[in-house]
Length: 489
Ligand code: ADP
Image (cartoon, rainbow, N blue to C red; front, side):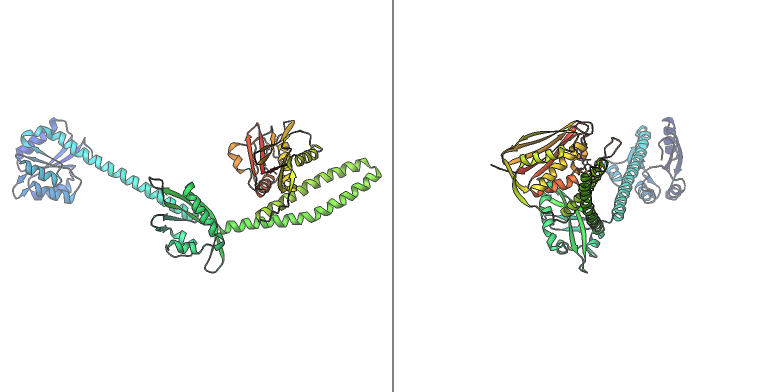
């Protein structure tokens, strides 16, 4: 439908009036094709064959009138605009016909308004049509987005739930039910009943925290009807009302049994590999020691150098294996701790004296906690110190010194290592203590290591009721530090 070339159907038994209207429209420059019907039969045929863009209708015709014409027009083509063009009409009648769906009415003695009324009525239909089309398009896009989301969820095997904290009502997707071996949504208590009794506390804790943090996240085991175990990961977002009271939790449930199995496989592999490596290494170490003694006695300098190199490599290997073993103990919750009281500054001095022997960098000591004793596993805390100092040396290839510091703060002692090396990007700092995490540096070469030292260090410090942290600036350097509870002597 266009306003610049219109098909106009006029229902009018007075030929002069019809001609008058047509002339007026031409005079006003309204480009159109005009058809006149003089009675009901012609009107119905013209509606079907001529397919007008707009209907102009006189009110009373022989055995026909505008009210009926409007009814027929609307029933056949509900969207065609209809304007009553009449010699005389009471206000009530005009109101009535507009109420019945006519777009406008024009009195024959005020015909000049007709062209603009036609344009306005047609334009309104065009606007309505465009609005409808836009609405339809938006609806289709929403449907498409929903469909895409549904397919993606299905492909990822994600179950969805919506839990009303006020009423306790629960809505779940079919995948969500499937994960719990249900055919349809059940009461919330039935889902909870499948959770492993030893893991219920994990859920309760996460649930409690979610009301503060706004996010729910936990992993736990569920017991299948055949008594086997499946792992699920539950995520959710807490929706609050205007007063800030939590109202609903909406989120996802994922079956992570396969993922957990692979993790277990990996841990198993590390356990086996490290044990297998440990035995030959121990033997090798013993024979190297004996050989070294023999060569010393024979004063064979060249062999002595080779043996020393061999020994260094074996020590590196041995450190790797120990790291793997430690990491494994941590994962299986078997990290032991032989706690005793020791002076932290003395321990630092011992560690640094030892490391100075093999380091080409200056290790500056600034110790300020002479009276602080900590109760922890001394070997393990020294292992953390060694790891942090070795990292500082390793990751500052262009610098000539590192600084090792201690200080005491109320009931704590803080140990820190500062380097002026490659530093760490802000966004990677939070990952630095993860098992096997190694930062990608853009220096074009890689530093040796398995990404276990900081993971082990952080677990050791945690076990000793301490905190480990890092401050770092890419390209400038890093300060790794840990604090431990201490007593003063
Ligand atoms: P490894 O050094 O054996 O790879 P770590 O767990 O000790 O493992 O360290 C993990 C990662 O953290 C390193 O690979 C490195 O990218 C980064 N990192 C650790 N210490 C420093 C440091 N002092 N400066 C810059 N990056 C560091």
